[in-house]
Length: 428
Image (tube, rainbow, N blue to C red):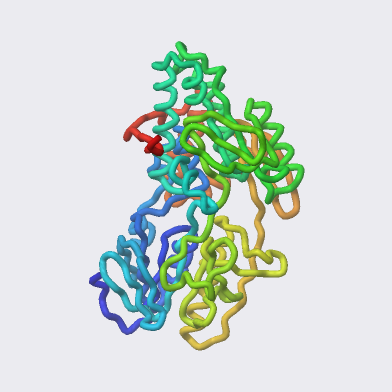
């Protein structure tokens, strides 16, 4: 990998997500050598992926080069690599570009879509965890409308214009709201010769409410917003299969659709070597102690979505969201310096700063620790918070200008099929 030999302790970080970047920044000017490994050369702001998939933003608005984030930091090295295995006994990371010894290792590999073992759904549905997946979804949505113009088969046309979103969490709710706004404000102008009133947007939720992690008031208000936008919400329904054409459920409900978006959950993106049962707990996450140390090791840590830190308030582990990851990254930076200096580490305590979701134009729900509100003001708060956490002044300005333009013109400029996406259906 051509990493220079140094007298400083070498800290290897796997993953350039919220947790990995927060930790690297914290260690940036200390007397340590930091090596960050990721299979992408950019940090991806996942909360806005749905806007890429619906043409509201281009991908470069929510991505930022990792090298640029940390370019001014001494003793920092980035390598584009796919980590294949961790040899904990030899203190070595094995990758597709070579092996690397470490003094301290931090696994911040994040999460991946959880299909709960259903290979048919995994094969035929669309995920939205990465920028390439968001671009694939954007292409498919637009291609569906182009195909609907060409077919004379009414059933086929209805299936092409029927969108099914599995999962009523923030991702599913925000995507449904964006699609509903496209149906209302954009499709009639782009496709005047297509009856866009036939477009159906469905959310299928296995529990009795959407936005389950938020307050009852936020959940109900979000449901009201979506229903006013024409979104169909099916609660207490679980999807059992999707063959690329028909969605089957645990009830009598079925859906004929060319597009099923799977937003029903995530699981930890484990790495060989730390994926044995002794390390892994619920959600395919690595069990860590209050210092984010992996069981049985003092020099190997896990932070962010991949880490499961069980607390009295969160017995199933902290939420797999940006804030716990960022906070863990910050504190682990301090703790690693304490460990190197042979000082006692401080236990991690999560500060819940609240949660929020937007349902579209002037519609959002916000739950803060001491106050909860919905509607227009919540929408402005949601925009401000997301702009604040974007990395880079250019990204903030581009996103802000896009949002202002979209708001004034009721338009989404990035309706581009840059790379056509073709679904590979099961052979009949």
